[in-house]
Length: 519
Image (cartoon, rainbow, N blue to C red; front, top):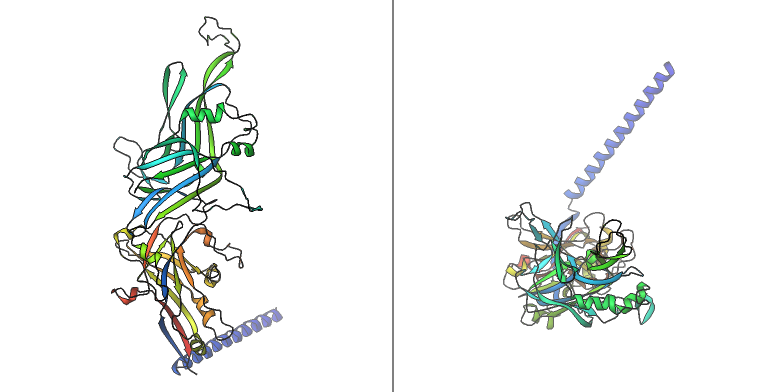
């Protein structure tokens, strides 16, 4: 017992000695820190550097295998007009048969909107929805046309069959048979489908189809006669023997829009369907029921007209096209004759093969002189302020900054991914929700550029509308190439580097916070 007591006393004594040592070290460190500050060995400062920024056109962007596809027309004073089309293949069950004596009743293409159900229903008791992801005036009509696609959509690149073909927004497609054409505008109340049925000679009935998961969708009625010809009358057994044969025979749909203005819809085509409502005859034994009206109830193989539905998904290759017209828009001069030497007052950034802003850092700056100062970079900020304009309210929620010369992510995207990343999120005014600015933090990149030994060469940067495909893979530290996917059509006008008579605080420049050793 005595030995255990003595050992316990020793342990407590050693712990106390260690604790006193730690406290003593902390006091010594604090005293050293105070001495350094008191001796003015370091100065913390900030400095603004001029940049040159201007707008650059994007000729095309990749539009296949993306989560969102655009369809419609949109025009505004800042960015002009964009007219979009869409092409898609459809899937088919191999060996699909329409049965005995089929007759096409109704054909509908159904494309769901992005929508949000409101807390209060309409006055008639029907659900009230708000349509999301639509730009422009939803009350303006424009022409929507659906054609049978005649352009074959290749899965493999014809120039290199070992690679998957990529589709870009400036490609053109042809259609050889018109299946639908009519005036169109988004309809938030389009939740129920009415299907015409012809069960008996000269008689019709209307079936009302209401999905359990009620939500609005685009419903385009196609020409029943043409669909019957394409899918029942003309195809051979070989055309329907495999999916490969089928997409050679029926290459898909081409959606086109035309008009001067309207609305542009961003749509998820993964849930879009092509629906054929038809009637065929099923040979049925009467078994006590007079099915053919001949007075007998024991006939065999009586043909009974039966309602059928064939639903085919939009699958395979899908792509959008973007046609832009900058005539008369504010962007026209900035994009056609950018001042790449002095920069511009305003910058125009828009997705969907629109435009980007390029930024040259350290205008007329001797970088070697700065490197000789051996600065410790505490922060490096680029603030892009939103130009306050009535047409500039529906702006992208995030922009992306990257190395334009190498088309790759800059260092901070990787080094700060577990913290705040590079930034670029839209900041809004608390009271009015007015968009204010996008802030980018590029501290690590600037640190590498300004370090005295083996510095990183300064590169031209670019700002684009952010897409999730811009981010490097979460586990990758080497694959930093920016993909050229683009499907967000929103745009924003930003303050450039040149003075336009407004406050200097909103003018684009590079602000660096640094600590300098005074020894």
